[in-house]
Image 1 (tube, helix red, strand yellow):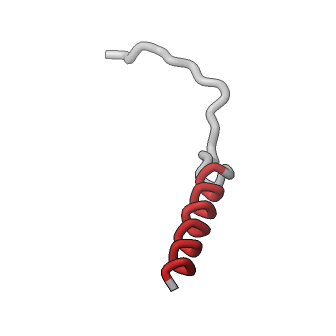
Image 2 (tube, one colour):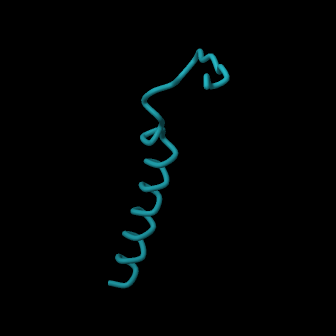
Length: 41
């Protein structure tokens, strides 16, 4: 029983790492061109 729980925890940790590293949390909007001007007073 303990071996089953350990294997399950290891698999869950591995799947979480794959999901985090697989690009699921990448930004969906990317700014490519921008112009910065000084503020007008």
